Length: 208
Image 1 (cartoon, helix red, strand yellow):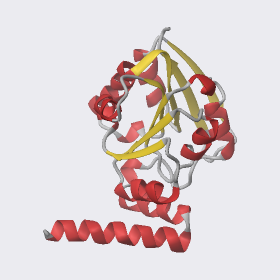
Image 2 (cartoon, rainbow, N blue to C red):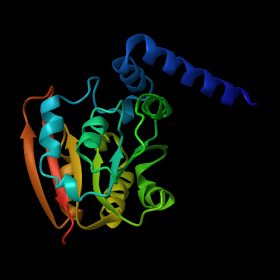
Image 3 (cartoon, rainbow, N blue to C red):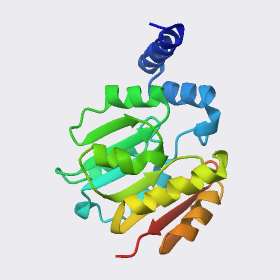
Image 4 (tube, helix red, strand yellow):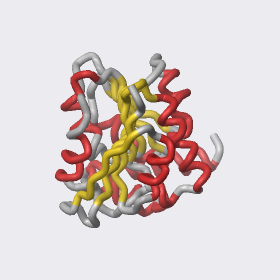
């Protein structure tokens, strides 16, 4: 085993121990410190933001939902509460600490956590046995991503969605909204003031 593999295993073991000692927020904080460019804030989104973001979706009709950047599961758990019994939630994150935490704490047969990039969403959904998704919800900090990568993620999200599907983002800046508006057929927007700092919510809809 290489030194790099040993170091990676040690870090993941430390993250699991941190989660046990400090709870989910300890894991979130460690992830934010180790990889600040891929975590949008030092605090998870507020309950009001979660409720506001999810309220426009017809969850009863969903079969496949994809979440980018699930972190410690701030949106993941509420989504699972809304999903039908035969639906599936695929969470994609580049942070191994977060993926391990979700696998350790969410015991739901509808849930699958994948270590990978949102840019590969089509391949990841296909590997899970599905052709398309009903909803894609993203917590990725688009302002911290290279512009070509951010654009490719939004375009891949459009392609992976079924007609009538939605791409949901919650961001402090407006970059994700602008990208969504350029790709999707229709958008809805809202500013969630009951969040620190205030969140810009955007729903991008693919034409039915």
